[in-house]
Length: 381
Ligand code: PMP
Ligand code: GLN
Image 1 (cartoon, rainbow, N blue to C red):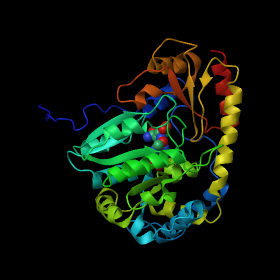
Image 2: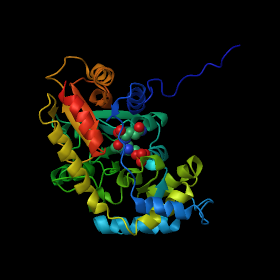
Image 3: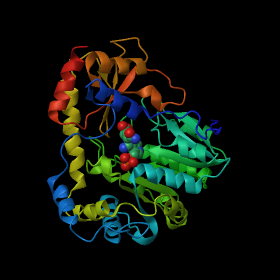
């Protein structure tokens, strides 16, 4: 039997670190603070809505770009949160999670030979769609304190640059962009007016002392920015895989062309459920909710040998284990599971050069008991 020989389109892609660590955590029965998902119950109002909807007529295709009542609710949410008026019919797309919004937008807009600037450490969903377009990912490292280095970003840009991908609040570092960052971005875009900004804001409602500054609020971005949001992150329902993308009509027209053949329409019952839930839920409570978790987790680890880095947003805490071990971070995370019963994510996997800095990421979107049990183990190391 001879197998067909294929040339991989993504020869360097392996199983995602989130899958690897979650699988290993379950094999060794470790407490899973690796992959980012909450382990506490979903809001009862949402589960009641979905139970009721199961018996109603919401089981057939919705219109391609989204269920109209949900599109209107998204427009209301964006207006309430950011004072931006968007037109549901032309500027919103409901997606199967933020992942699909990112992939679809890149596929629709980036051409062979284009360059796309990605800021490292970076989430794993950005590079592969760029490569599938036969375009070039240009990975630029953030400063040591995870602020963007606008000088190196500008140096990385040229007439070939089609897109800059920004993730704010930032996974894995928990850093958020400042007004000064947006001024630098505005200056950069005045030099390169054709660059499209893809702003991944899936943690938009999870910030703490400092307020999140959304690309939605910046006039200079409105005609060239694609906004990526995730209901999975905002409503503790990562498994539902539902989110939305907002873009000006000329970009959205192209994005919808790809969506039409990639997905056509996102599952109807979750769209209907979220459109009703948006009447009762208050997204502004999310920051306080996760700030309490962050503070509690930090307090629990206060006497450990881990050194905790600042966390301004998201539900991730970066920690240095330099005082504990000389192992590289991937080895350290594996031993953390096998020898100590806690799973985390090695930060080197977010860099193109896999630079080891003895840093790991914990997810604190967990119930108190889980955080306490994990902290007990981590304090014994
Ligand atoms: N972007 C970032 C920065 C993420 O951390 C994640 C993971 N939740 C996603 C996108 C993907 O979100 P979703 O599960 O809605 O596809
Ligand atoms: N966004 C999640 C994280 O950063 C992972 C989601 C996934 O496994 N694809 O942990």
